Amino acid sequence: MTRGGVRYNGFPPYLADTEEECSVSLRQLMVNEGLIPSSEDENKRRIVILKLQKIVVRWVKSIAWKRRLPQHHINATNATIVPYGSYGLGVHGSQSDIDALCIGPFFATIAEDFFIDLRDLLKSRAEVSEIHCVKDAKVPLIRFKFDGILVDLPYAQLRLLSIPNNVDVLNPFFLRGIDETSWRSLSGVRANQCILQIVPSVELFQSLLRCVKLWAKRRGVYGNLNGFLGGVHMAILAAFVCGYEPNATLSSLVASFFSTFAYWQWPTPVVLLRDAYAAAGSPPGLMPIQLPCGGRQYCNSNITRSTFYKIMSEFLRGHHLMKDYLKPSFNWTSLFEPYPYATTYAWFVKIHLSADNQEGLSDWVGWVKSRFRCLLIKIEEVFGLCDPNPTEYVETCEKQPNIVYYWGLHLGNINVSDIETVEMDFLKNVNNRGSFQGTVGGIKLSVVQASQLPTKSVECDRSKNVARTCWRVREDKQCKNTPVYSRQRPGYVKMSNRDAESTDVKC
Ligand SMILES: Nc1ncnc2c1ncn2[C@@H]1O[C@H](COP(=O)(O)OP(=O)(O)OP(=O)(O)O)[C@@H](O)[C@H]1O
Ligand SMILES: [Mg+2]
Ligand SMILES: [Mg+2]
Image (cartoon, rainbow, N blue to C red; front, side, top):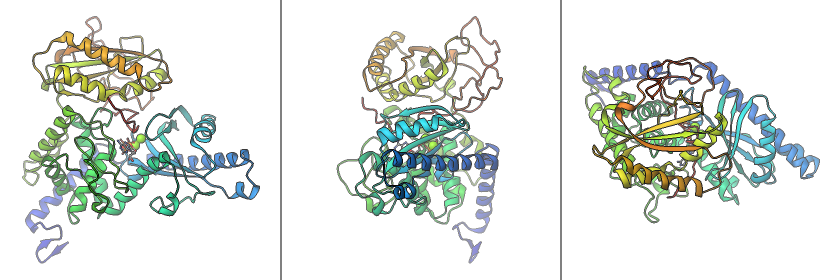
């Protein structure tokens, strides 16, 4: 498309061709990286949503019957399922969870009807496994696997008898008189809808978001619980850039993403909807990002001094690489190169979590991870800046199910025994706070050298239970380099199953 010899995207013709070639090669990389889900995967997800929709309608009618509502009310009542998160934005990968909000009528309560009756109904289904109620999060939810796909199901209750299947959650009529938890649970859906309305091209926004999420995962700056950026933060940052470049190409948007945030004057908040923002006290955190859903809500963030530093360094790195993106020598793979932990840091804090069985481990790790911000702050006090690599490892030579993390320390000279104070403080924090319902597992902290890191693909993907064989490299001398069979899938890092929890962790 040209206009007066100049491409509509504002590049002169000779550069516009390069620009387009560059975008094409980036799209090819996205395909090669498996970022675009297959049609089977899409179909499977659609079926999950349809089945959940049927389940919640059945559930809500049974509650209406239990409450002895008149028959015509039982007939008329309805609940609905609204997908949001990365699936709702159309940027999910094959490993992503499905975030789906259940919206129910005035008589179906969260405490009893949702967390007891709906949970029991879900549990009775053959497709459902690993079901847990996460009641103490800011956005309480039921988490389970449906046909092997992880589902996060929060609940919002509207003051209506029947929730239309296509309920407009931006319409104030539906939101009047709702409780605080329902309001918070709805904010993710509303944020998604605002984003999709704001961006000039949904397709370009989706492609940009897929790219920057891949970048963030590769460079170790993805994951809210580890103090980095979560899916929602990335979505708002990507939408912000798209809003300012209505005629851009994909590669120029990636370049803008990095140039914008490499020099962003934090803590100036990133705000998508200008009107919604009015100075009402200072925005929270080191990198405030406002949720585009009204009410001046901000994304929950666990960013600390350390993770702020790492995210900013990575924005700058991305910006420096992208300065050359129109040069023939430019190659996208350098932008997505995995972060070289082993050669960057000399010392690592090793966090070893264990439990008696896999299910107990999943609960235990989720609980401990919700306290990671406190651990990170303690480590910063004792050892200075730290890089909490979100990669999960497994020590296969141990009998007990376990998950291990290695967090890089910036200082070259450290007192190894200082880790004991950190461990003591963290244990107090983990044991004393909140209401962990599961069985308490083990936590061991130690300091190790880079040479003691696992060397190959021994990362753990807890989202998959697919039994596949792979090499694992054991750490201790006895089993060094002994190949063993494992149930874990090798490959690139899958973030925590718990990342969606909007638990506000205060230290
Ligand atoms: N820290 C947070 N602050 C505010 N809302 C959040 C936060 N974390 C999650 N949410 C809400 O929950 C939704 C789902 O979160 P989730 O962690 O599953 O991320 P996602 O965007 O779906 O990415 P992923 O593909 O990694 O699952 C987000 O889109 C957002 O609406
Ligand atoms: Mg998600
Ligand atoms: Mg989620």
